[in-house]
Image (cartoon, rainbow, N blue to C red; front, side, top):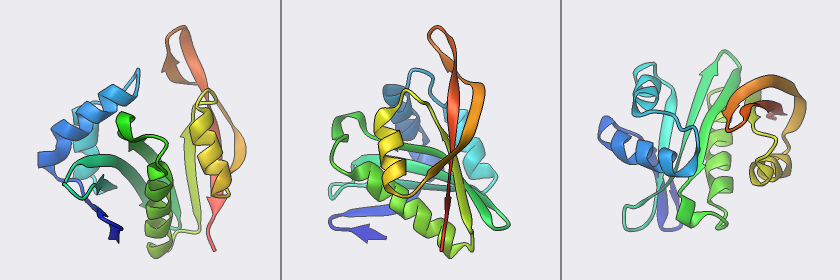
Length: 152
């Protein structure tokens, strides 16, 4: 799918080093290259958002089964944040989930990630609950806010 001069395409094995490097730059406790490889191996939807010059602007990972989908990862390049790319990635995943026949989409997010919480709330996600001590954190563990959106 093309968005202006940007386009979405499937992540390939050749992209894993770049994706893992972006992940490491973005997060204190990043996914490893091996985790991304496993996502490809099991058939999760793993897509890149590329700029007009082929640069990787972000990526996303979606798992789906039956009529539910789970957003596992959504990341925007650190130097491109604030440009609305997170919304493009999220809208892309919601469209993919809907096209796959999913009726509900779930995700977890750190309560300290105010930008992500605002993005998800703006797209109609609602809080279902908390997963206690879900994420690693500098001082131990951090809860995860569990969000869901019903698709029409």
